[in-house]
Length: 164
Image (cartoon, rainbow, N blue to C red; front, top):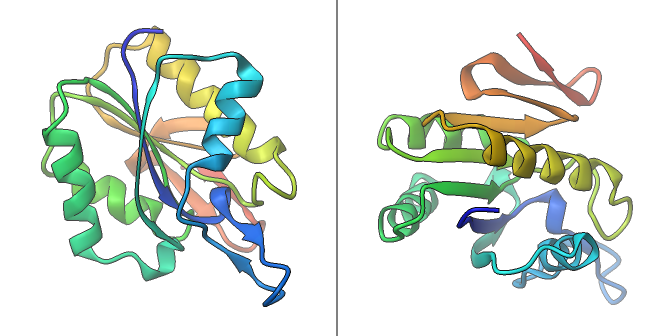
């Protein structure tokens, strides 16, 4: 794999069950993505953890923080782990400001800690895409699909993402 940056912002992908409160929480760590990389035997990928929120709590100031990280790194292939509810808003925000990097946003409908299949598939789709593509555009990888952010949406009634 060529040089790759993973920006982990939280979302359901990262959530874990808190045995004290009985709630699913977004921990302030990168354990979920680190576990996937370890199980896949993928090494030498930089992970930057930031924000650590459910995407319903994501603000434009958080998106600005993601943008600054991307702009300050001399890496052209980037994966952003993000919550599914506002993944499209962050993708649009970044598309308006970045034209020279390959960025794939992904998340999961179920936490990696509870059911890793969805998140692992989306992660694998994103990694594969970045290995074979040289298009500088903002993509979303969800429900085993990948498409330009303008062409994929969350079908809330079915609980999955679909291509328009």
